[in-house]
Image 1 (spheres, rainbow, N blue to C red):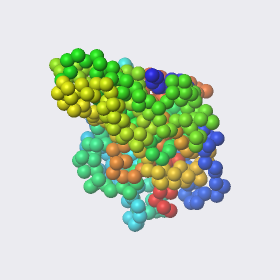
Image 2: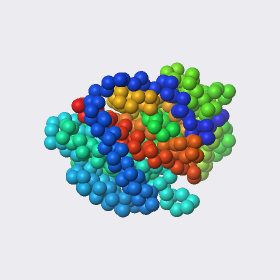
Image 3: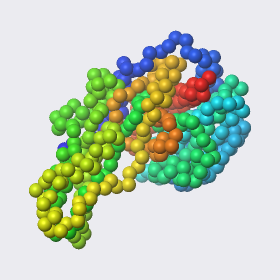
Length: 427
């Protein structure tokens, strides 16, 4: 059994996907306002870099983002946005209300940093995310007279602990603001200037699966059965090109091809946890699936496997209680709304051309983001935004010790996503 690790070949996994990017349209709708967005972004770029540098200098862990939140709130207030604070922690929400009827469209930026060997650092790019969202707020505020509806800029704490989004939802986020659509992005190791997404799962759903037995005195046969049952879930052959991470960017089988091999798969990690206390035995395995239907089928498949085993009759004979299968409490998984995602990619490609990439495959590395919990209530899309410049040794691999970002991504991000929000308002 093989497991997927994040190697250097994944860093450029999407470089060649431009072959499958959207065709640029020569005359985009709302061409003037998109030109104004780019002009305003260029004008404030140096200010935004200074904001990013300040945030980078003062990183704060999940749940401790007081200074970061205060700075964000002050900048939003200076723009004249309505500011809402401290829903579910050190959150900040800036509302740009045009005073005209229309949709309410929200954008999320996470604001927390991570612990590292050197202390606390922004090695996941959340300082960049925050800066881009602040830039979007400033750019779109300058165009307020041309907009309709509401824009909601959500600065979320505690993403790294997977608690921030749920805390905001639990403490009244949907009462305070009621977005019709919700969007977010994350820095990725793609080259700077690229943005990518797909409908449905962007990352494989990753679960810990526990097989629980009771009245077990001699566990070895049960352990062997549990491991074999979990291993049997895997759908990818040992010699498949799937396991070579270089193939993620292959133009014929990679993520950007409609017939990619990175779809409709279940893979099992080559590790198991065994806990035997008294007569209770739990064997845990780790499974990734590329779509929800496959993940939901695992429960029944394992039950059937055990029921058909040589030990099934023994359970009854020794008065075993029914074998149980449970999923451990799991984080939500990014699940992009199909129609919104397709429309969003098309609208950005219409303005910015080949830098906008449509994916078909599901990335099999177990990553995630608690923006998924917002998506369970509000339709929306999560994007990957390239932040690397390999020629300069800048590699934007989140959480890597050598994580670095090409600051030009700030300008790209503000342009791309400001234009996206304008298009989503329906102008």
